[in-house]
Length: 379
Image 1 (cartoon, rainbow, N blue to C red):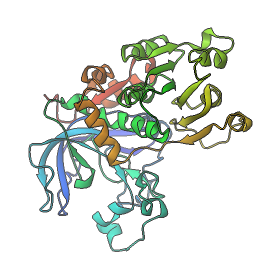
Image 2 (cartoon, rainbow, N blue to C red; image 1 turned 180 degrees about the horizontal axis):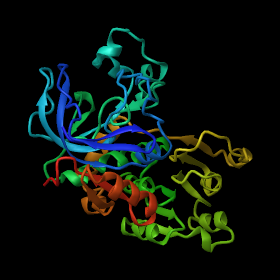
Image 3 (cartoon, rainbow, N blue to C red; image 1 turned 90 degrees about the vertical axis):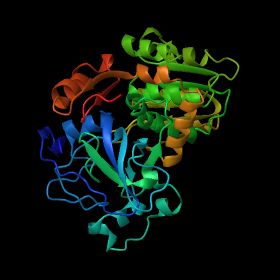
Image 4 (cartoon, rainbow, N blue to C red; image 1 turned 30 degrees about the horizontal axis):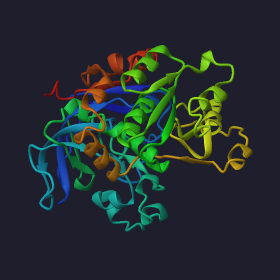
């Protein structure tokens, strides 16, 4: 099949001879990829990796696969074949793929199934998104959505409502990242939220908060174009560069609680981390959604203690998040037209580096989500 292969840092190559995945297990589903979003993680793999991808000469812990493999984990597509035990989707269904790989997936692959490895403590506790061997389809477990076809276990495949277009459906994955973060905040309808950073996950967080019936959403973002995107999604916007007392002025926006009920750091720099805590009201919850470099930062522990605030992190998603995002789209809490706002470009697999990766790297303020179309534009 055709696809874009990842060999190493800075080395992505289009090929027409990518091995096409096959249905080999009773619960496998083969999907013709319609659209696959380029994620910030894909950019990190290209610029700094391998990170999730196995290093040269190494094998993925879940599948035992080695490079090269096709990237891409924000996928929508059409089912073309199912294993004998698959009942909840059939050929022709439009679907999305929850792309995590964890202990339960090891049994699907010859390299790891014979090892009889026990489940890690996180998977035993029903938290596969923080599996000690966590990986993703399209980041090492197998070739992903920058190729024409993918095969994955049916427990990761969710059917879409008929009215949801396939291009819009590719955004279910990043919105699910944000949805999981909102769940981590134990967010309740009617509460207030601060989103710090108006990049793709920050904007997705606005949609996830709308799906949770937030009463007020404020997005703090210095870049004008990103603030404009946030406004289009229905958030109030705040430019931190225009305020001497950023925290005080943010808290003044919600005087009734003297700060926000929840804050989501989608930027990942020391000042935004501290602001996510300081801008909370008493008992508020700050959630780190950003992916940080592996190095420590300083912060003031008493900023939590004085008002019994909480700070936590959010990692990826689980199938439940995908199902709830799809439901929120179906019932109109997350409007389709708002999801489509996030799509700022579409490129072929062959043009992904030049017109996708480079565009996002060099013009990130004017782009949110660029979709790869490995099989051409889909209806």
